[in-house]
Image (cartoon, rainbow, N blue to C red; front, top):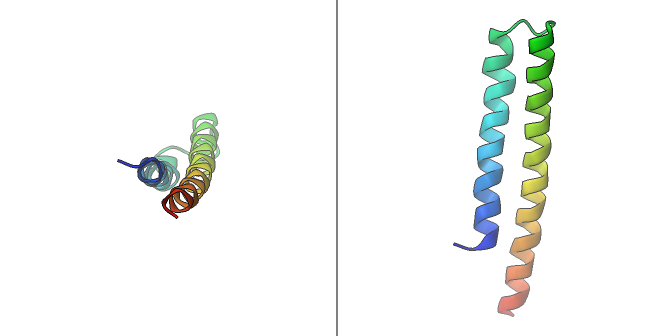
Amino acid sequence: MQTSDKYCAAALVCLSLAIFVLSVVEFLVNPSSIAGIVIACIGVLLMCCTIYLFARYNHALKEEERSRS
């Protein structure tokens, strides 16, 4: 498995978790409570990880294309 594929898979997992946390879990807990705020922060951190992993995926994909040429 190539490095770019690993980054893409990890980014998709993070994206799925972030969507789950921000949509399902956040509304099971009162969003204005302390637990709701903590869960919202976790969801935002997961979204930041998703952005980072997709950026790493793009970079790794470009590096692999350069090494083939």
